[in-house]
Image 1: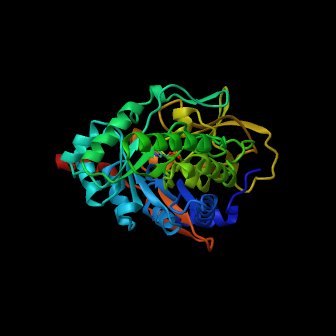
Image 2: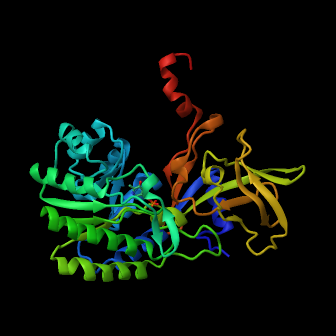
Length: 415
Ligand SMILES: *Cc1c(COP(=O)(O)O)cnc(C)c1O
C-alpha cells in the first residue's frame, strides 16, 4: 500500500478551503529527498543538483529546492525568469536548451547562467546573442544505442540533442580560441530509469570523454553534467532508485578515470522527475458514476490536469481516501470530462467501491503533472498547494478563472 502524507479528515478540511481538483506537494518529503541526493554525492566537493524546472515550474517549490542547495536547470526564457525570481543567478542556473531563440541566450547571459550548448553552430549564434562566456558546457550525443548490460535504454542516434564526438572536439578547439577557460560536458541518454547502473555508466563514458578531450585539445574540463533521467516507481511493485548506491558507483568511476587524469571535476545533475515526482498528488472528487458496457467513475479533474495517462498510457496509482483498507473489489475506468476517449486516469483498475463525493488521490503527479497542463475543451488549470511541514496547506498557485482563459483575447475588445 502506498502511504499518503495526509489523512482523509485533513484533506476534507483542505478541500473545504480550496475546491478540487488541485495538485498538492509534500514539502518535507521534497526536502528529505534532496538531502539524500546531496549526501550520496557529498564525496564530490562541487556537486550540485540543478532542478529541471520543466518538471514543476512553481516558484514556491523552486525556492524550497534552492534552500536545499539546488540550482535551476532551465531551457526557456520564462524558466530563466522563474529562476531569477527565486534568487538564482550565475552558477545557480544551468541553461540546457536546444533550438534556442537568440533572446533566450541573451537573457541567460545577462544572468551569467552556465550555458550548455546543444550544437556546434550555436557557438557563432551565442557569440552574436550575448557573447561567449569563460566557462561553458557542451552537450554530447554518442549516437548508436545506449545500453545497460543487454538492455537498450535509449537511442541517442535518433535523438535531436547534442553533438557528435568530432563536433564536440572541434567545438572545444573553437571555444578555446575564443577565450573559454573552463569546459563542461553533458549528456542525457536514458529517461525515467530506476536502473541504478544508469548514472555510473553515463559518468564512466563522460569521464573518459573528458580525459580524451583534455589530452587532444588541452581544454580544462571542470564540470561533468549527468543531467536527468533517474526515474521513480510509478507502479506499486517497482523499486526506488538507490541514490546512495548510485553516488558510490559514480565515485568509483571518478577514482578510476578522473583522478589519474589529473583533472579536477565537479559533478552536477539536472534531475526533475526524481526530485519532485513522488511528492505531488492530484486530488479530485468523484462526481459521476456511469454503468454501461463498463463501469466509469467521472471525476472533476481531467487530462488537462495530468496528461501522462492519456499521452503515454502511464500508470498512476490511485487511492480512494478513507477507503485505504477496504477491499478493492470493484473494477472501474476513472475518467475526466474531455471530449476525448483517452481522457482516463485509470482503465480497468481494481478499487474499493466509490461513492459520489469521495476524494480520489492520484499519486506521483509532482513532475510533468501540472506543468504539462493545457486548456483543451476550455478547461481551466487547477490550483497548486503546498503541504507544509506543520501539516497545513498553503496556496502556491491559484486556480485559473474564465477571465484568465479569455485574457489573451483582449485584442478583440468583445469579451
Ligand atoms: C527533461 C530534462 C531534464 C530532466 O529530466 P528528468 O527525467 O525529469 O530527470 C534534465 N535535463 C534536460 C536537458 C532535460 O531536457
